[in-house]
Image (tube, rainbow, N blue to C red):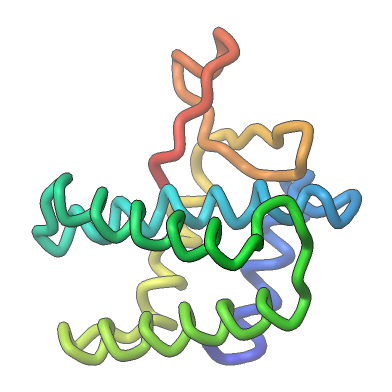
Length: 138
């Protein structure tokens, strides 16, 4: 993503009180990303069994490696790179400009009301969220 657009995304996030107060909040942002990754899998036609198998495999690997409950900066940086690379490859396969898609999404994001949870993760407000529930659909 071009630098100016990335800064615009970060400004939008911070303008809605999103952010990270401390390192322990990082996991909640990664879990929020997981919501979107599952939605992307569904949008590409993956079924629940395939998604569940991948999820189970990754949990198993993390358990064997003893990775749970620890912040691993070098592992985090590597995984962010993996996500960015795979997203670029997928976008290329469907002839999509990520920058154009993000610009279009920012128009939508600037429309509804967003709520920031106690970890700085943003959730779109819905009728249910006004009753204390979260809605991860972005």
